[in-house]
Image (cartoon, rainbow, N blue to C red; front, side, top):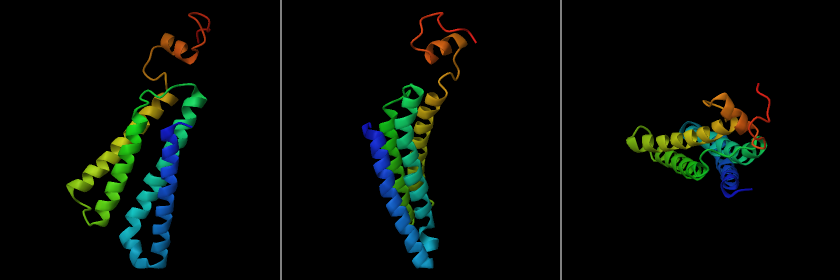
Length: 152
């Protein structure tokens, strides 16, 4: 398994432990529920779920589809930006900076990281998007020479 898909999966497990811990704390003391629900939700969804989906998708989809990611270096940026953005959102939220520019900056960094993931995975899943038919046949059947695949 490549470095970054593995890092995504490892990070997702750390976020799961943190998210579940916040959930347990919220159930023990209802006062925590109001204060930490944002942290609990975002840690579990953006931290655990999205990181796990990204790690597995980056590992599996290119192999199953026999297609490369259009921007392989984007995986590194996705990992860094998603962690930076999510951790920044959580810390600024806990410090009380919920409606400030710094919180917006971290939220935007998180969004950019997710757009990177969508870009990479979209073009693995839909390689023929916005290409002409002759190019599509060559890309779908790289082992074929010109004219060996029947026209659809």
